[in-house]
Picture 1 (cartoon, helix red, strand yellow):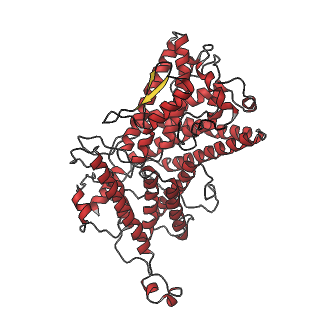
Picture 2 (tube, rainbow, N blue to C red):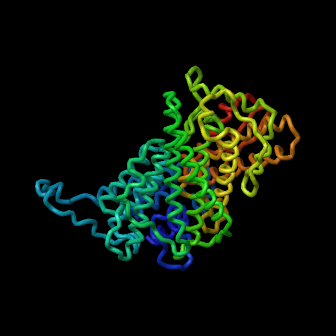
Picture 3 (spheres, one colour):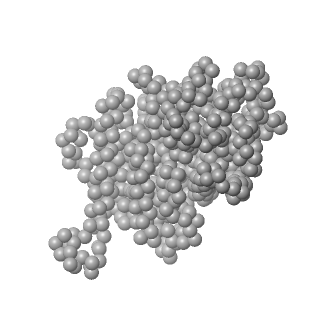
Length: 541
């Protein structure tokens, strides 16, 4: 138990703080245990914890390559970690079912409905977490596993929904009168379950199964000794990006039906008004000096990570809000990623605005390069910028011009890149690359990549027509930002196979954009193939 709990605090807690802070302020040491293929094939009889929480944590830790593995990126090693992790997930789900089992119901079912369930008579996994919360926490952890490792959004939503139901059955959503030493555990179990439910809605681009601002959700926010603002800001950022995702869905429906855009226009103005102070607050937080301390009872590094993740979510929400005005939401990926639509199949009928993508690389007028001044640390330029299209009447009904939304998307995308770079790595000494875990913000990385790719194509056309130093600087800045996002996804993909489909290093070739990510055997990864195909279709190259 101690080894798995240490593993949680080293590799998971700062990115997904669903457990209370460590009881001791003593430095936590990585004492991970190496497992072999033979142990899995023969059945590991020495590793049989009954706690679903212990098993769920072990399933996530099993995906991290062990320092003693000679070839962690080999196919055999990857398959072994995948199989072992899946075995632990199945065991965790079985344990959850067992804990709700009534032994007498199989022998005397006629008495089962009239008898009370005594609960699970075992020792808790964590001294500050009651046993009845362990299933809720395990399900929340496994919801992220289903998304990031298995790529199964439907099951991810199912796990999060099950965690929500169990949490509400325990009245975790409402502030109770009890304020015992388990109170912090209740708060974190509830609010991280809430976050998982919101994430499920964002990933699937569907309405949430709860009212996000339900007045019955009165459980207080968790606390962090090092920073009282971290948790409220993080939860607010989650609510904001969900609002932006719902806005995108409603915008698409309105455009497809050809309905009046006045309501959408008003919502866009309101959401932008809410986002501006949040972006400013996030930028102010980003000016602080990171501590790089290991997890301790003060949770300073957890507070910093929560604020960094909040900044990523807020800026991603801003890209979602301005994507249509900036780029007409034109698809460039051959597969759907979050709410980014794929390129239509040949012969399919799409909205008229998709045909205007050719104008991205055509114009040499204006001063697109001056947008570099709108990046962090610079002012907003006053010079006019060419838009991506001049023939879409719908754009006139929006409160923001194309050039304004492009500048906002550029700044937001660069903020996301900067924030991903600021995310800490697990505090462990190793001669191998250590992955960050719980990649619940991969959709934010894709939002940033989308905006940067579209802006990069525009910069390419400007670069061909001008030797302006601002154009050259912007081109390099965007290129480096795309490389950084690719590195972020590469790192996540070490312990989250589904994220591997989002990787890519971006390099221009010829007149169009050609993108690739070289793997160990020299082959291109799946998303890079998708992007290359879509760019070649629309831009050539």
